[in-house]
Length: 114
Image (cartoon, rainbow, N blue to C red; front, side, top):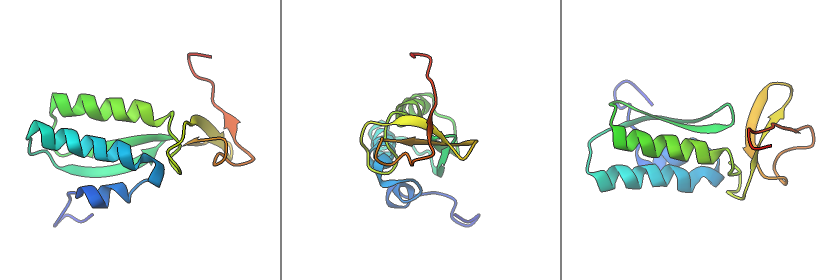
């Protein structure tokens, strides 16, 4: 995005991450619309294997939705949307993928539940 137009439309936002996270991104936009708030989405990306969505203004209810979606993204394959896990690839690169999309060199990252 540019300084002139820093806000992502919903359609632009879903293109910033893999197709598997499209429904998660759309969930945030639906919540934003449902709340009737005027908060702009300024960044959508993958970071350390999870979905990150940043806004231009803090709104507690929307932030709760964004945090929930971010946590759930670790168990959704970014590529296809199937059930996934957090994997480490090439030493320090983290991805959330299903078994089919994790890659042969991936190592499963243990969770607190394991």
